Length: 340
Image (cartoon, rainbow, N blue to C red; front, side):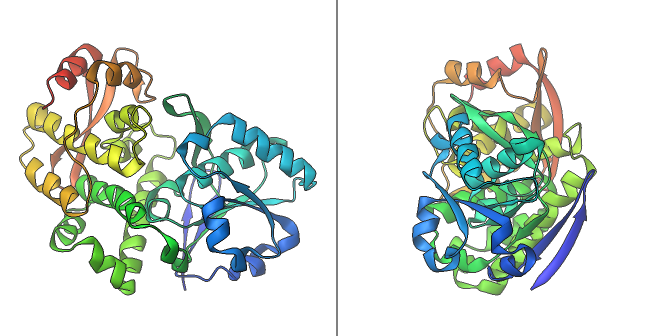
């Protein structure tokens, strides 16, 4: 096991890499915790979760809504959860988002920790303190920024992960290479998904590297005033179409990154769109897609990165270097309508 701590504005978060789930009981004890997970994980890992107070959610983004939050709070009251109770989110991004949000509002805030069980959650969704829910087709419209106390990485959870969820997570890994780490991007170009699925040391190293990229960016700008905006590469358009078409997060972000590369080509003369598209394709992610552009733009108008008449849009100046460029909404509408 490897441990690393990151200091954020109001909390230090301890990361336990390559750990075993059994460590959780030593850290907090079964009597002090309520686990929140989903039905897939609960069924696949019953032995691990035996003896814990457990709330099992229906799986999927469509349940990342206020009604689910209300249901969890009612169950916490039944468990007689109080301010000394820990909430532990065990799952992918939907579970960690909801758990963090409930922990922030239940009794005005109780402690929480995450056991991410998907690649996406391990490298992105569980890191950085963003917690929230969707409202209709608007992703993460309601939520908080509040750090968990710890992240515990037990890679044995990945054994039950479907291939599509591996693909889903690699969208965010490719994103990190695009915006921040050219050598990571080059490593991804040389390999395929099966390399990391079969090679545990390579996977563990990749997860740590990506967790460090995201954590370091968040440390520099926890409340997303500048640097943290780079993490939204591909997300502005991606989020707009994700719930419109019931795409997985990775699929939507991949299409969004492809569009962002085309826009980068147009506005800042980015030259490597083909390399990005080829790499996304190599990991089984979609790139070009037909979608309702006027409708997507209407959804995009409610994006949190919009400031009055401009959108803070993440572009690539070159591979490994993302930049944030404010684009007037009228200009952005024309650009999106012209996307191939």
